[in-house]
Image (cartoon, rainbow, N blue to C red; front, side):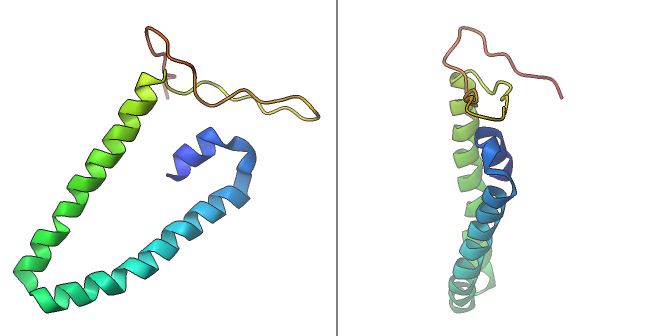
Amino acid sequence: MLGVTSELFPRGGALLLGIMGGAGMLSVGLVLPIMGSKFDSLGAGAALSSVARLPIILTVIFGAVYIGFRLKGGYRVVEITSGSETQTSGIQTPSPKPQFSKI
């Protein structure tokens, strides 16, 4: 999520990345005690089966994000300029053949 945030909102800089990282840490801090109490009450076998569902859910979510970006045409170069000039958007409009930069 930090990569997507930095690509789509380059002017956010370190502040926006810090906010995103803090939101992630806050969610972990809130969810782990709940998961721990549930695992203690269920036992080892049931806890393993419930944890095994999480990667499947995340694969579906991030796969949908990836396909959504591909359908929109992918990323394009964002030019950040000084002064009153505006920046170009991070996502292209739909095109017949998406162009992706090679890393």
